[in-house]
Image (tube, rainbow, N blue to C red; front, side, top):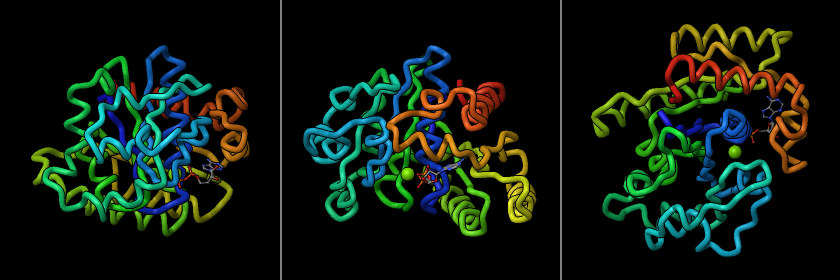
Length: 255
Ligand code: ADP
Ligand code: MG
């Protein structure tokens, strides 16, 4: 499993934080790791310090003219190889939504790339909407991580997504492997336990045992253009993302 999409229809649940720091944890294991930004808000790109020279140097050109992904890769300070996003990606649904096989564009492109293979894992940061962009991620990936910040609306987003994944499976002719990940978890809050119980009852074995704590280093590092490992390697946040990777490797969710 080497292509992982991080997705929840709800915004602000920790998708970008998880994509960034899971990729950074993979780098620490010596893997050449790619981060693909599929959110028009381009937070992953900007945290990585990447300002695209033009829309053509971003994911937009995959949709516009099938540009090979390897031509779009940019090195970041954190060593994550970033394939950047662009604000104009927000128009992809309107511009290309009716195109033939548009939802398979990323999957088809990755087949001819050295990106997303065993030693070159790819983490995709999705936008908080089901549309052409996130469907491309779901069709291309080997597994989905669904972050749930420990609150009611984020759980609702995960339940909606579960229904969407179930509806997509007959089209894909396979089950989409998934892991639900509690983020911003604060065990002192009653609501956090309630969400944990609800999520475990509903999603059972697919809930990660690792929970990502509410942690100030995780909140601070994006403004410094850093991963949590660069900003504060001894922090609880860094430990949590190391633990998450160890769990996903141990159960074969990531190869
Ligand atoms: P999304 O990509 O789902 O919109 P983000 O990863 O951007 O969510 O997170 C939303 C906000 O919450 C950001 O300001 C981020 O720094 C902060 N954040 C995310 N995870 C944590 C955490 N575990 N502890 C503290 N702050 C967090
Ligand atoms: Mg985001």
